[in-house]
Amino acid sequence: MISSPIAASPPISIDHHARTRSAVLDAAEQLFSQHGVDGASIRQIVKLAGVNLGAINYHFGTKERLALEVFARRLEPVNLDRIARLDALEAAADHRPLKLEQIIEALVRPAVESEGRGARDCDDMMRLISRCFQEPNTELKHFVEEKFAEVTRRFESAILRAVPGLPSGELFWRMHFLFGALHHGQEMWLRFDQLPRPTDRETVKPDREGFIQRVIAFTAAGLSSPIIVPS
Amino acid sequence: MISSPIAASPPISIDHHARTRSAVLDAAEQLFSQHGVDGASIRQIVKLAGVNLGAINYHFGTKERLALEVFARRLEPVNLDRIARLDALEAAADHRPLKLEQIIEALVRPAVESEGRGARDCDDMMRLISRCFQEPNTELKHFVEEKFAEVTRRFESAILRAVPGLPSGELFWRMHFLFGALHHGQEMWLRFDQLPRPTDRETVKPDREGFIQRVIAFTAAGLSSPIIVPS
DNA sequence: GATCAACTCGAACGAACGTATGAATTAATT
DNA sequence: AATTAATTCATACGTTCGTTCGAGTTGATC
Image (tube, rainbow over all chains, first blue to last red):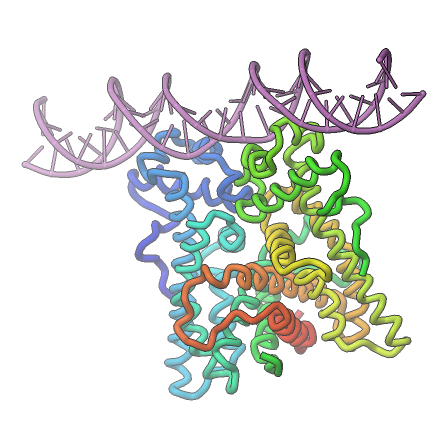
């Protein structure tokens, strides 16, 4: 697995210079995830980070740039990992077709767990990724969508090979349904204890692996569902 | 179809008293949908509504209460319509089992179109519903979740009858995937023209009916997908 | 150690925020 | 028409916001 992103700061830093910077990014991540970008003030962020208000301006310029960096440092490694996993699957398959479930797993797993990271850090990542898709700010929306354009194309071409007869125009919409299911499912999985109590006793929070498998099952079926006849 | 909600104000009002009130609600709906609750200020709202700043305090008390009312007046009729449609299906079926697609359609259609309303108003409704699920504010989250608790239970019991062997604990998670797919799909359908350009020529924006049918196909397949073996 | 670069700090700025309030106006009731 | 109730208005309040800035401190280089 590719361990470090190229463009965004790693969550763990060594030298003094980056200590303030990553403290701000960590604090911002926590607060943006919970309150949204508009709902989290930079005074909250610097207080949580234990740094001075001027640090934001010095290191990031504006709050919006800070948010972009917070999002990038989680999204970029996830998307790189996704592509690496798909590359590895294709290399191992040696021109034989991949199963759809394998492809979806390569897409889903990096957004849910990250090797070498603790459960808490993975939850933080999930929470932030889920929030990315909820931000109303137009710049952030476009930024996130651009971040996903390449990985989405890469996976679409693999999925089209795995699902014969699926038109690419149909897949476009199904990819959106897939991402919606994944991200909303992530948020609910993280917030399970705060949801209205289900009336039955059967409903439990699956572990991380169980969550992944449920997403894969649901979305694989959806991706390969019959094509509806009217245009 | 049930046309008026009980608890929330109708979008169209007759007497003078409600004119200011509904102007505020309409303006708030537009601005909350676009910018989120935190991103839309009440000065923006009163300016768009053409009323005075004090009107918010007089009619609604606080911004948060205004937001709750804005959300309620769209969510409540949708959910009532959902239940009414399911009731009508079950009455017409006369104890024969419903098809899963029918059930999902009863859930999805009211969130996408509303009889007697124009396309623009339906789009506004979709946009607001989509935003409901994205708001970070805890009060609003709980409010929305409570609004959905009853309708979700009602549909879950119908779906469990339509999909033999599906454990209710599994359905809990699949309902969240369904709602994620629906709401994210709605947002993307509305924003199709602003999305990164798909590289192919096949990808078009389906009409409203085409969107509904795509959601139904994807989610019906997902809801009835095989149960995974490990717990 | 001197110099330059990088960084942190505390304070300030101008603007904006949501909430509150009493006066004025309008509507409803008698 | 007089009285009461409801509503609107303009203003103010206290607070908070994101951004800026120059002084001071620390780090890097020679």
